[in-house]
Image (cartoon, rainbow, N blue to C red; front, side, top):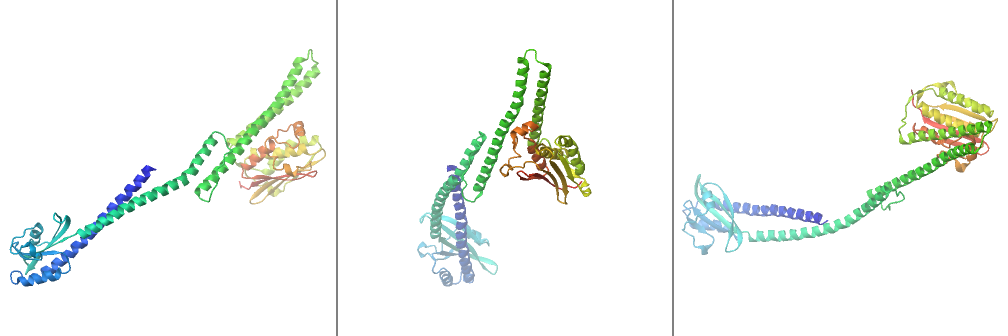
Length: 460
């Protein structure tokens, strides 16, 4: 801060020096021009009187210099003083040599500034030639003290330096205040950032005002909320995944212990245990496969690969795969496909196939025996809607927002019986989102559920 204050002070001082230089030059220039004007008037009025009428010379110079403190001297071409307004100097008839008089007798105007030791002030002197018929017959020499001008300049100089000092102090105080106003939130930003780097996402910044810093604070808070949500989801995911993996592993361990602890086990019992063991391994494999799928979707490793897809053909393929499971429960699968819906479009076939399959598979699993599942396709110029409807138990209104959470099950015991992992809908949601679409759910308890996969239409 001290350095900043010093830089401001030096800048103001340099500006003051520059202003003083310009002002001094301007004031001295004004004096010089004024004296040259007077000297030329005198030279013009006395040119015809050099060496003839000294009285006329005196009258001209006295009249021109009346009311001023300018000393005037007229010399002839031999540097002899013909008239001097300072009668006490006793220069009349004497040789008066000055460099600027020599210059003026050479035909040029001359100007100089010198120090007067007796008055301790600066003096301005000018000299102009007196010409008569293209001949130089003499010189007009004028000199004046500029003590008043120097006094004015010194007064301005003193006030400029005082002003510079006051401005520097004021700017310094304002800078300190602004520094506190600006750096205080920045320091808070730094502290929150350090806490975030340590994994503490619960920190929040205070939002004050409506300036850029408040917008940054809002952005930081939003980022903290997102990171906290991600961290909570990660912890929940790890916990749920551990639990899901632990259950089949515990069952496998129990089956193995039962076989090992039984002496001379009956072959039929061993076969039954091995069948149970096989089911648990299949279940474990499904969980791992789906976890890997979600990991790829989350990390964006599994990029969307668009290709031309016939949706009617894709949906018929899903129905063929699910027909055996539907037949076991005597569930009827109906379709609503019009021929005009058969036009091809660009989609990631595998992702949409899995999304439709997961939702339709759930519909069959949760629909009671002798029920129905209806799959429809509706296409417009802007959207594609895949409708999957069932007459199952429905979804409670309070649970609609949770069914897409990973490992979430409405009926946990039934899901385990049907081999559900609680990941199918989460995978479906991610797959549809990667196409820029969404999944809407309409459901009524005791009536059934309808899932709408809504995708933006992309032509082939």
